[in-house]
Amino acid sequence: MSAPARIEVTAEALLWIAILKAKHGPLMFYLSSGCCEGSSPMCFTKGDYRVSEADVLLGEVGGSPFYLSAQQFEYWHHTQMILDVTPGQGSGFSLEAPEGVSFLTRSRVFSDAEAAELAAAGDPPRAG
Image (cartoon, rainbow, N blue to C red; front, side, top):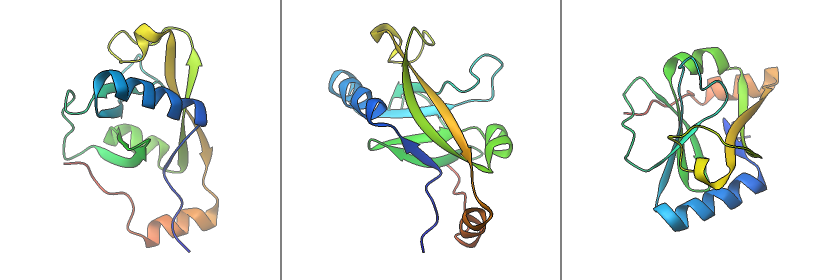
């Protein structure tokens, strides 16, 4: 049995990823531990945000890497993130903001069995 994905994505978020890729090229996502971001990841053109070795690569959504700050990962390590999109203006720095939508994350707690599978797989990888 393989370990569960740390990041999943809804169909609507996948649609917006495709729209933004068509406009901007390859994308990346980053969920920081800043005071204002909360559950709203930032969407950038790939390479426009520099990740550090301390950041955690949760996985990919629509072929785009999704990173989390190490501080956020410590807080959320017991959950699976689900990338979604909602109507409304998000952060001015995120690529979807001018489109009138905002990416956000939802989460669900891993079961004990899933947590054991992740641990056995040596999860999580670091960015870098």
